[in-house]
Image (cartoon, rainbow, N blue to C red; front, side, top):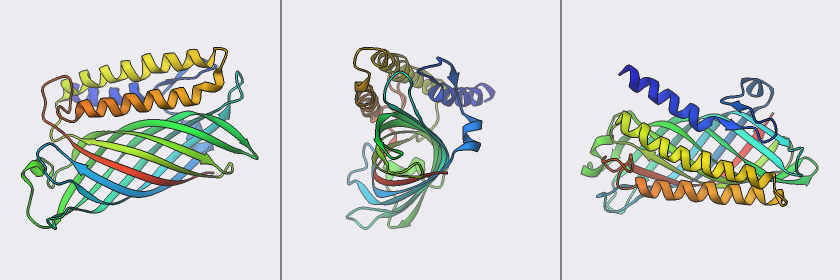
Length: 273
């Protein structure tokens, strides 16, 4: 149990640790930034729940509240903007339902990080292409209808999982930004510590070491202006591809049960104070 707890704590640190493109220093969470640039975000959209063997998919509205820190700064090496956002969140899907009148309520809380690059628009504005992810815990309650066998492991229990997301954010002013994004939450029916750590390490190598290293090379090449698009497409592609691999094995490539997947298309409003 002790090593399992240590492992759970180490993985998010690895996933959050990002190199500064100009200073080459590694950081996990910028507490000073949290004090200097607190952020508040609210998003709403449509959610869809699916799992192997579930039959009809569940759909319903979803809302998310995020509190954290956000930092937007100009890179010295190129006329680009660098955006970093660390946050805690509380999410509620109040009425997931399907055609047979079965209705559920699913709530989640967790921590996450978004980052990316973008282009200046003038007057403090920017067009930002962001990707990220995090960890979350969730619980589902049955509001109406009979239980579904495929969702039995999730009923009335706090379940651990991971999140991947991508967003196009238009920073209208230094205070206000509006974004459109997609989020996929992977919810584990059980927690297999060592298989989870092994699977997360493989994803980290692909997403952070390979893709992150390639993007840093683009930033130092002849066309650094391509970095925002390259970073967004590669990271989003890896995230989508990886979660598709997890669809049948929650700790791919290791033998493990299928998770539940909660997809959301979100419209977000974010304020940085």
